[in-house]
Amino acid sequence: MAEMVKVAVDAMGGDNAPGEIVKGAVEAVNADRRVKVFLVGREPAIREELKKYTCDGDRLEIVHAEEVIETAEPPVMAIRRKKDSSIVKCMNMVKDGTCDAMVSAGSTGAVLVGGQVIVGRIKGVERPPLAPLIPNAKGVSLLLDCGANVDARASQLLQFAKMGSIYMESVIGVKNPRVGLVNIGVEEEKGNALTKETYPLLLNCPEINFIGNVEARDIPEGAADVLVCEAFAGNIVLKMLEGVSSVLVGKIKEGMMSSLKSKLGALLVKPALKKTLKGFSTEEYGGAPLLGLNGLVVKTHGSSKAIEIQHSVLQCIAFKEQNINEKIKEQIVLETS
Image (cartoon, rainbow, N blue to C red; front, side, top):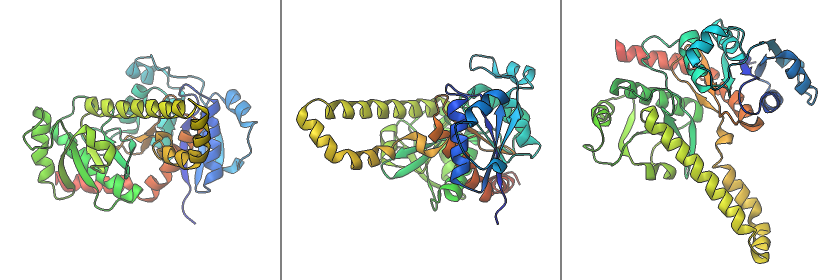
């Protein structure tokens, strides 16, 4: 039998904590016997939520943490001062090996700072990127970075490409993933100083399948499996895709309810449409791993519902079973040797 994957879940993080967080954790435990979840946060509140559900008690434990890091708090100060917060306790459980991974919908800043300061970077990794999966017409792409490093260097983008390729091939199952550099044009000479410096590094890297520059309009078509950029551009790409997706779904629903004929037509297409739209929901793909750390840290949306928490917990299984960190270490050692 495979070794149990242990995941610490920040039960107090996010807009819908602890209700949706606890529900998602329970659903993850019920969905896969390979995972054990530690719900970290205020025990009375967690127990109250757990009364609503049935699950395997041997694979779900509560770890009390009295404090909560709020979104508006300065991240560095919060990590230093709130040692008994749910985020810090989750981080320490990953650091000391109690857990293989942690999941949080809480303060992005605190998760990013805690990941580097407490869990720590793999030796040789310059900067860990946040790497969410984003849906496209062909499946999914991995976007990195989307929020951790707004002023990255070319050498760091090269590492992002390598780590992203490992993740896509080992966790998602994409063979020889295509790596694209997010840019304002497909020509090699296009872009700013960073993209111009990064392009030849990616082009001459034998460990990745670099296909060149990728424009934003081609991302939804699935132009590349791994999309490389610094976090300023990446966050804009991510938020724009989420916003357009939300507006389109709203407009489709509005159009279907606009007349009696459209309502009748909606009844006929509803099953197929629901299935199609589900594939474009970011909730179905879990959270964004912070790649390059000594343990797995997954950041989910602050507005996460149970389904996203469930998928975020379950994605930790493939990460552990495929030895992603060991593969990243091997790649970075190869790069620096």
